[in-house]
Amino acid sequence: MAAYSYKGVCFRDDFIAMVEEWKAKQIEDWGREDYDGSSDYDGDNWAVAAMLLNAKDKRISELEANQKEN
Figure 1: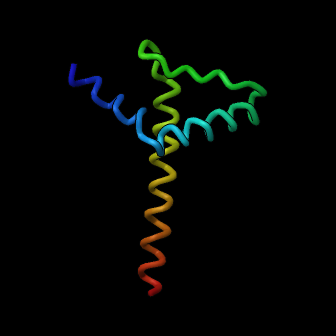
Figure 2: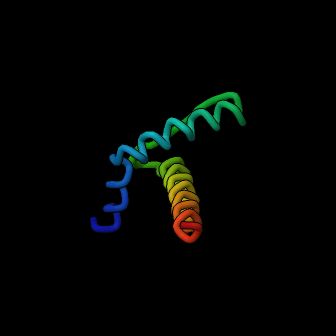
């Protein structure tokens, strides 16, 4: 059961906002948005989580660079 605790991230506001960004990208790239966040298939949730982590990593790098400048 503990292996499924990662799914808690799916209820975070920043994750939910990233889902909308993911959907827009799917429409732009493929002309459709087939988001499937069901508990039986988590491929889309993993893709959104990766996007969220990448966005957070980028923001952290920007903040660190800004801090070094000041």
